[in-house]
Each structure stands twice: as structure tokens, then as C-alpha cells.
Length: 411
Image: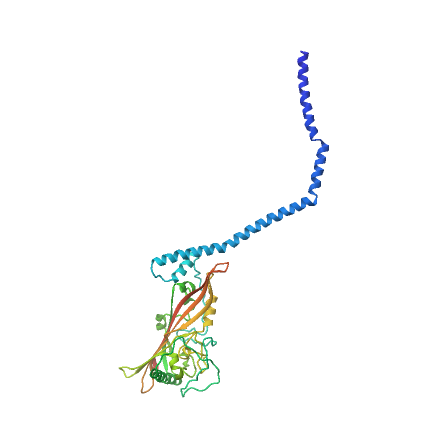
């Protein structure tokens, strides 16, 4: 019994000796020494330097990742645009001859929806109240297309001036024979005599003027609803005929053909061959005579001021014209987020005058004045917000037709 009791008492003692050994490994002295060593290391310069290096490395890694994500955006957009354009070009090739301008519009529409927001901007110098007055065309002259010293007009009714101008030029070659040059001069002088006389005696008349624009596919996007943006300039034929402009006898003749206080035509017969493409003079069954004059093409013709007696361009000597820079300024003011307009070019073509008059009296019976010009807009297709040009140097064309019909002359 005693032996068994002794064994039971010894067993616990052995376990206590093991616990004492474990506590001995983590004795207070050793723990204090370890903590002191750790504290000394963390307070040392080496530890601080390692911490600074780690933090800098972490910040640099995060910043580099952000930069890579930002710089990848333009490349992705360009790749998308190129892929869409290639796909559309392939489809167009299969259709044999579809218009290349459709590619541009499809690419644009697949990247982003066009900006259809419009604002009302009046075209200063060309607007008109339909029932009161016709538009004016007085603007700052543009001499970018002129090259030489001008020739003064030779009509006896025109007075001399000391204003120095440059000679306007056309975009077509001169191929007239001597007989054709003589005929053009004769017809032009007859026309000038008739209209300039009317301008001086100031008959009453009724005027119907309307302007329309035809746009190619790119212009439909770039120019948008330009007619709504310039309601004083673009007037439908129906609206114009419903509200004709009536000029009473002895009224201001600025409503007649060109805005000039003294003359309705400023073109010199010396420039007839260079300025005029075709003339025609025919007798009518009612005893009247009909004259038709068609001018040659002219690029960006300069505007002739209303008080000037020498024309700044061939077209403005017989027709109302608009200024290139004025058009560019207004289009740039309303360009969308998708496009950046870089230039505007105006090509006047097929400008035609048809006049019926009585040869015995010189009285005008009717005049139809038709002005046409192509407004070619050069633009860059851009990425919204970033302002990156992904398709630079694109063009859009809108053809404007300005028709004025003069009837019911009262002498």
C-alpha cells in the first residue's frame, strides 16, 4: 500500500520539473534582453531606411499602374476606330463603289453618337426680315485669292476712285477666241447699262429670295441642322414666296442685285473674258430681250463694300457673296465634341443672271439671280474629353443655292 502511494506522489513531481524547465527558457531576464535587442534594432538608422524604401516602392508601383491605365485609353480608342473603319471599308469594297464618305460617317457613329444640340446664331450682314428688307453682304475684304493690279471699269456712268485693290482671279483657264471676247464685252455692257440705269431711277419691285443647302454624308454630321441654326439666312422657297419683299418706288436700291448705292454691276468689260464663262442674248416673243450671264468659278471671292466702286472680286461685282472667315468663325463656334474644324473653303460656281428687259425703253421686266457655292469644311475627328485627333484632315461639303427673283417693276 505504501509503495503504491509513493508512486502516485512521485509522478506529479516529474511533471512539475518539466514545467520549471520550460519557464526557465522564457525567464524574465532573457525576455527583457530580447525586448531590448528588438527595441534597439527598430530605433536604428538601418531599420528606418528599410521602412522608407518599402513605402517609396509601394507608392511608385501604384502610380505606375495608374499611368499605364491612362495611357492605354487613346491606343484602345484608336485601335477600335481603325478596326471599325477596316470593317466598313471591306463591306464597301464588296458593294463596288459606295461613297468613301460613308466610311467616315459610319466610323463616327459607331464611336459616339453625334452632337445634335443646336444654338441660334444670326449671320451678321446676311440676315433679312422676310417682309421688310433683303440681306446685306458688307464684310471685311479678303484678298487671299488676288494676284495683280486691278483694272478700272470703263462704263461712262462709273466715277473714278483712289482706292487701291488687287485683281481678283478665277479658277478656270481662259480659252476665248477674239470673237467670243468681243461678244462677252458687248453683252456685259448692255446688261450694265440696263441694271445700272434701273439702280439710279429707283423703280418699285417685288423680291422673293430663298436659300437652301445640300449636304454630303459627312456634312450631315459636321454641319448638323445648319438651316435651323441660321434661320435668317436659310429660307425655303415656300416661305419666301408666302412673304415676298416689296420695295416701293424711289426706295433704297440696296435690295437690288448687289448692295451698292450707285451701281447694280461693277464688272469692267476689260475683265469680261476672264470673269465670264458664257453669255447669251435672245429676242423674246413679247418684244423683250433676254440676257443670260454665267460667271466662271471663283474660290473664296472677296466681299466688295457697299460704298466702294471697284470690285474686290469678280463674283462680288455682280452677286452677293459671303466671307470665308465669317463662315469659319460661326461654324467653329458651334462645332461638336466629336469634331474640330480647322478650315473652311468657299468655291462659287455656276453663278447665273437672267434678265428680261424692253430694248426700246431699257426698262427691266424681271431678273433671276442664282448664286451657288460649295462650303468645304476641313475637320479632325477627335476623341471626346481627351481632344486627340484620331482621323485628321477629313472634309465635308455643303452646297448652298441662293436664288433671288425680281418681278413686278413699277416705273
